[in-house]
Image (cartoon, rainbow, N blue to C red; front, side):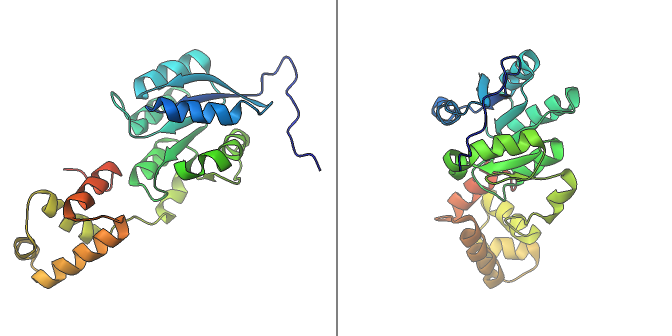
Length: 217
């Protein structure tokens, strides 16, 4: 059975898409995937949050795909502003990690869901259509702000506390003394942290946690 969506009528241009990512290759890759779809067309690109707000105002897209880590103005701040000015905005966050704290913040700010970047080629079309329809669909997790609490955080509160001390240059014994636990307990926390973040060493763990918005300094 042919499942190709019908072409939109001449007076209805189909789903109008805004793609926001600071990497041109990612933007071009998304456009190359959607070009063959008769019911979706890219109306604008943006390379940072400020450009995204300007492009949204100018083009009023039906769906926006939004990266989070960008220069000038990040994705969460851009989503906050867009949803404040246009409450009906349908924004899908592009995230490297499903459990990203930044992605959760974006949903609280008004995004309707997130799409892991690893699923871009296979899932982006379903993600766009699902977001446009306001329904759950393959390739995208559509969530309401109230659902965010159900998403597991990558690290526990204690592990984040330990890692924050590591970022400040503390060694295991020093951190244990500050937190009132043994050095062995800190070592166990660090082992768990590096396993959860798939980090190569302590410095790498700190870098990952900062990039994913798990902690700040």
